[in-house]
Amino acid sequence: MTAPLKNVILYAIMVLLLVGTGLTQGWNLALTIFNMGLISAIMALGVNLQWGFAGLFNIGIMGFVALGGLATVLVSMPPVPEAWSAGGGRVLAGLVLGAATVGAAVLTYGRLRGRARTFGVLAVLIGGFFLYRYVFDGGVAAVEAVSPASTGYLGGLGLPVLLAWPVGGVLAAGAAWLIGKTALGLRSDYLAIATLGIAEIIIAVMKNEDWLARGVKNVVGIPRPAPVVPYEVDLQKSPEFLANAAAWGLDPTNASTLYVKLMYGILFAIVLVILLVLMQRALHSPWGRMMRAIRDNEVAAEAMGKNVTARHLQIFILGSAICGIAGAMMTTLDGQLTPGTYQPLRFTFLVWVMVIVGGSGNNFGSVLGGMLIWWLWVEVEPIGLGLMSILTSGLPDGSAVKDTLIDSAAQMRLLTMGLVLLLVLRFSPRGLIPEK
Image (cartoon, rainbow, N blue to C red):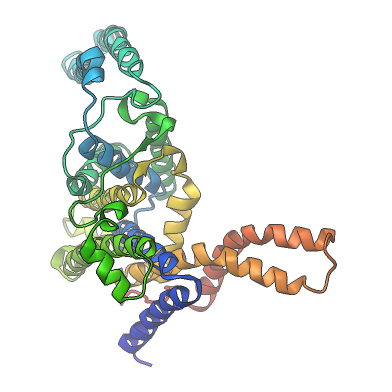
């Protein structure tokens, strides 16, 4: 079997899985899996860019995804005038003072020598810290005191939510630049630890700084990408839509939900196709060949005059930006920002499984892995519950063995992910669609 035919068959199987889900469990669920599968595929593309192209081991994925989610709040939510009047100016002034303190410390370090350098830097940092906290804390307290049950934060810019997607990429890219400047010189295992730690710091800040995005109180009501994705209640008031739903024999409520999810799917598919085309062009360009040469032998590439550290920083920023875009898309789909949901299992382990199973270094493999693993992640639990029910059908009701096996069906997800990963590494170690 030729490689192109094999790839077509694999994608056809994925389509059949989605269609089968729609026919047996409802098209609402099938479209939900499809939409999150597209977002997962975009995350997998970002990780594949870093690992598959350059060999960078980044396990801080959830931090960049969270920054993308934060961008949707900062861009699309309306500002809170009362909070800005109460302490918005002090918060901004405090942030400026904090940045100025760091800049002054760096400048002092470069200008002075010996003991004068040590005492000078300490004086700048200590004095700047207390001044920053005096200004910043007062503003934060004033902002968070404004209707804390419903707002208690500064809000956003009130712009269309679609603008938040590229902004999410920019925020993630900026964080990646800061991380890369300090951590990319580390050995691969230390780089992984550093990225994980910094990602946890990002999540901790989002959970605890209520003035920024309400922390663990969550931001709800994030607007949709109008007019492409309308609200279901508006569709149900449209005579034209109701007539079309009746012509298809659909309930108006169900039809409106399907329409909204389909529109989201089209938007996400457009973004995925654009990124896939750009990454394929990059892969087959001189830049892509250079990145793979650096990945395969850094010493030889450096001997040929390539700036390995600069190229690693470049691709680290690009991959993180893609993860940030995916995070903004996911928060838009959810309609809310919930920092407590950014768990390592979901946004680190699962995305890495997608890349490894699909095929590291192959963009089409990453897309397939993203779709397939997300389908398994959703479907394994009900399949496992049905399987356990069949296996325990001969046992009497109330049996401890039967109850334990049925209750453990929820853990089938973790078992299946590990089993799939082991099988792929054993029988197709380069993934389902390996790198050429």
